[in-house]
Amino acid sequence: MATMHERPFDLLNKALGQQVLIRLKNGDDIRGKIMSFDVHMNLVIEGAEELDEGGGVKAKLGTILLRGGNILFVSPV
Image (cartoon, rainbow, N blue to C red; front, side):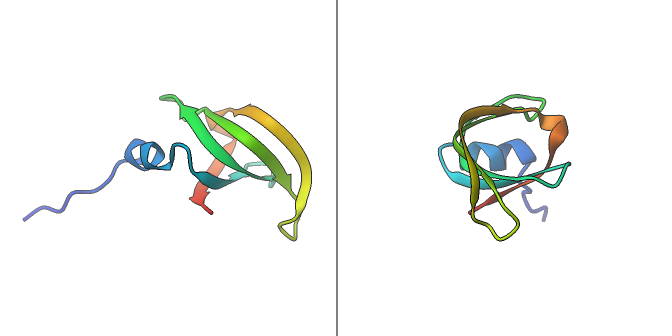
């Protein structure tokens, strides 16, 4: 009996409107709500904040677009 596995886009769909932590290839961490995404995993993030190494807010960014090619991982907060 085969088990059903979720695809990456299924997980992103579940994360829509939810707070997530995003690590970028340059090591920056961004926290905010995923508002939309596309097939290239480009993400529109609302209320985005850049975090410092201790997890504190380094800068408030507002609404941003992150290119999918710059993203290492997306994790629920």
